[in-house]
Image (cartoon, rainbow, N blue to C red; front, side, top):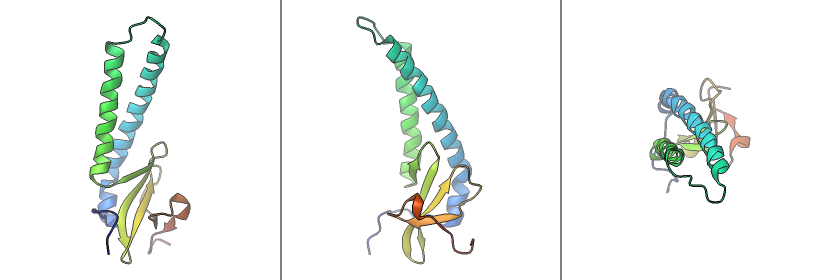
Length: 131
């Protein structure tokens, strides 16, 4: 049977990545806040006849590149970011031979939930053994 993902995580493997993922999410939030400030500056400069090149645009481009680099860290590991604002993360996994997601939100201490690939957050269930 074909699987949707090439990489699957055990609960232990996913848990081991949480400290790094917390750092990535924190850095992403900082970059996104920075980007918003730069976009506000750029839009304030967008009056006819104004040259908006230089430092502001270069900083915006660098920040976008930094965000893309962080997103690739998740993508290369097939870790899904379901909601960047909430820090909602899904790890492909198997439970009882079935391909599912281990589901974690950044304010949660540990990974305690899973859901079917198409169920989403609303379909979260406690992991077996954690009920």
